[in-house]
Image 1 (cartoon, rainbow, N blue to C red):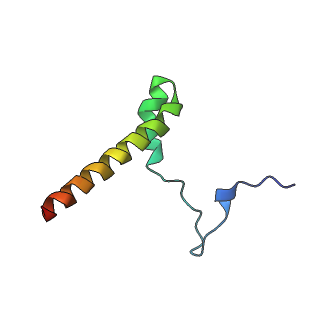
Image 2: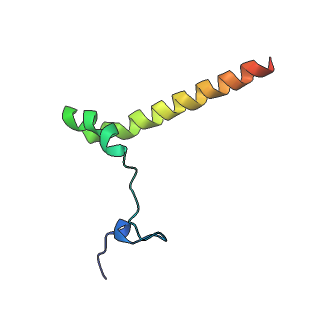
Image 3: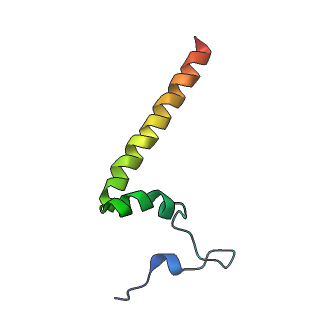
Length: 63
């Protein structure tokens, strides 16, 4: 079994893929607090919040 880093493979343009470059900036506050594990629940709640209020905005257009 070979151990290769999966994101080191070159794409069709000859570059390596990105692991969501902004994740470094999003995770910095959680890293500084001492637990990066809080990033995932925070992201889930944040995106749920965005989707919920986007849905409310579109529903208001119809009524």
